[in-house]
Image (cartoon, rainbow, N blue to C red; front, top):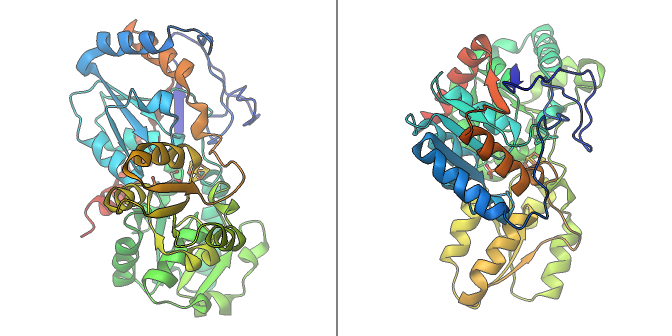
Amino acid sequence: MTTAQTTELDVQPSPLALLLLGREADPKSERGVECPGDLPSPSDPDLVERARAAKEKLGDKVFVLGHHYQRDEVIQFADVTGDSFKLAKDAAARPEAEYIVFCGVHFMAESADILTSDDQKVVLPDLAAGCSMADMATAEQVAECWDVLTEAGIAEQVVPVSYMNSSADIKAFTGRHGGTICTSSNAQRALEWAFAQGEKVLFLPDQHLGRNTAVRDMGLSLEDCVLYNPHKPNGGLTAEQLRDAKMILWRGHCSVHGRFSLESVEDVRARIPGVNVLVHPECRHEVVAAADYVGSTEYIIKALEAAPAGSKWAIGTELNLVRRLANRFAPEGKEIVFLDKTVCFCSTMNRIDLPHLVWTLESLAEGKLVNRIEVDRETEKFAKLALERMLALP
Ligand code: 13P
Ligand code: SF4
């Protein structure tokens, strides 16, 4: 479990989790934690200059990480950008930075805290930047699931593989039970590793990444996969179904990538003849099956960098990234459109904006540590084990 601390300013945990308004505090959840300070006004014309000045004052003491889904106004201040795998490695490779400012979401900041030394402080500019998918698997639910697997007599054959998009508690569960973490760029390698350790995989919490990797990349069938629903008794599965399955998929998903449908793919192919459809593996299986290319955010960027002039692309991932790529590659004659016709930002990624970044950097520059994300030692020990297994994957 994580504690989100703000020194000098007293934030009391509240039982309420209010994601949309971002008020009140709920450090146990990915969602709904208020900003404890006075944010600058979004209309302040000096915000860019203020961020630049505060960052310059902090010098090498601060290292700013930016996930690809962050807004342009934030990404311009990132020392490195990347997908969740790259950022986890980048955070671990900066032992000299006292502050790691993570422009991303809560689970990424937790992972950075786990992978950095005890005297480095990881800071999330807005504590309400959570992830609804990560919230779909709680420690209690996963412990109950393990009891169900034990009852069915299969727990010893099961290796947990948890997507990076999960809380530190779930990562610790994974480490304790001999499993590994994966990201969308190494899910296949993680599953190959897991199937070498045991006969079955419990894949948490993104059913789509689990199913897509198992079926599309590893040749398992849809019948090899079962869906464990934490809201139903015994996950909604019989002991026989669990015993017959190779992949036990947790019933979680990304609300952003879940919006893309087979119709979006068919539509864009009809609208733009010759278009290449490139989607993130968090999309539903039928979308991934109908796409031409599938990969993580880093993969998507590299594919577009390598694309020939005149090529056409429809991208199924978060809109900040797609818009940035469309602008970046337009001068090279690459036509890039968003796969869905409706706007699709990740609302929690979007919570980190320039006012929050300015407030964070100026606070740190004044010696005030705000919005620290700190994972407790016991959780950290086992979560680290699972993350290190991932980092050691061939
Ligand atoms: P990647 O950056 O690993 O592709 O993950 C996408 C995502 O949804 C992060 O929350
Ligand atoms: Fe979570 Fe989806 Fe947003 Fe990624 S894009 S942070 S998985 S809700």
